[in-house]
Length: 421
Length: 59
Image (tube, rainbow over all chains, first blue to last red):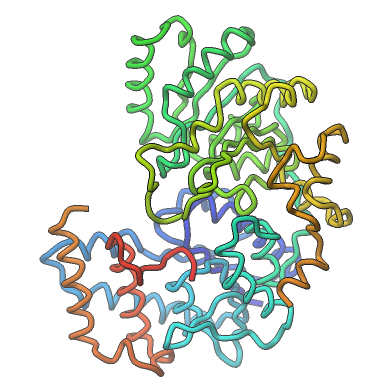
C-alpha cells in the first residue's frame, strides 16, 4: 500500500497532522507513507518517524523567483510540472489531503484515478470540490469542514478531529508519547509567534517574569526561541532590563534551540507557557503541564493544544478570534488586555500546585478551558464542554462561569451527525 | 510588501494568462502543465495583499 499525505501548511499544522499520520501507520503497518510538504517545514521532518519519504514542494523558492524581475515565468511552471509528474509516477494507492487549500486541491485532482483514491479536498477545473462518493461519512464531514467549520466561531470539532473524519483515520490513541523528564525547577516560555496579533508584547512577559521571580524564587526561568530569534531576544531583554528593575532578570536564560532540541527542554520543564505555536503542539506530546495563551487569530476550539490538562487563557472580545488572514481592525490589539500577567501567574501556579481554588478565585477576566481532554476520552463524549470543564477541574466549577462553554450544549457524535447530516 | 513587487506580481499573473490562456478554462484537470500554471497562479496571488481570490488557507 503506497500512501501520500499532503501537508502543505506550516510546522504547527504538520505536527497536528502527525496524529492522523500515526493512525495511517497503525492501519497500514507495512505500507509506505510519503508526505508532500512545503520547503519551509523541513526542520520538522525528524519529528515524524512514521513517514518513510518526504517530498518537498519548493513553495518559498518559487515565490522568491516570481518576485525577481529578470526571472522567466516558464521555469517555475516547469518545476511544478516536474513535481506533478514525479508524484504521478509513484502510483499511490491512496492520497490523504490534510491541507484544505486550493493548491493542495489542484495537486490531488491530478493524482486521482481509478487506482488512486483521494481522501480530503480535491478540486475540479472550475475550482469546485469533487465529491468523495466512496464514503458517506467522509463526504458529510468534508461538507461540514468546507461550509461550516471554516467560518464557525465555536465549531463542534477540533482541527485534528475534523481531519480525522475527513480522512477516515481515527484518533483513538491520543496520548503523550514522551515520558516526562525528572522533576524540574525550570519554567519555560515560548513568547514569540509569527503573527503579532497572537502574542503579548515583551513588556507584559517581563511583568510576568518579575511576578514569578517574586512568588517563586526557587524556579529558574527559561525563554525558548529559534536560532534566528536569539540575537533579537537578547537585545530586547537588555533594553527592558535597563528600564525596569534589572535585577529581576538576572539569571533569565534565553535558549536558542532547534525544534528537536526544544522537545527535550520542554520535557525537562516544570511547566511550559506558550502562545499558539508549533512548540505548543510539540509540547502536547510530552507530559509536561502546559499553559496556553490564545489571542488574536488563535482559535481555542480549532487549534488548541490537544494535551489533556492544558490550561488555556483566552481573550473575550467579540472580535476574538479574528480571521487567520488579514490584520487587526483596531488601533491596538485590545484582546491582549483581556489577559493580565497576574492571570498567567495563577494559571502557572495551578499547573505547578494544582491549586484549583486559588486559580478560580484569581481569574476574573479570562476564560479557562482545561484542554481538549475529550479527544482522549471518546467514551465520555456525551459531556458538554461545560461538563468537561466541570469534570476535569474536579467538579467544583459553577455553571455560567464560562460564557462560551455554556452554549455548547452537546459536544457528542449525535449532534455532530445531526449538524453535518 | 512594496508597491514595486506588488506591481510585478500582478504583471506575472497577466503574463500567465497571456502565455497559458487555456489555464482558467474547464477540463484542464488531466493536464499537468495547466495544473502547474494554476498552482503557480495561486502562489502569486497569495503574495498580493488584499487579493480576494488568494486563498492558501481554506476554501
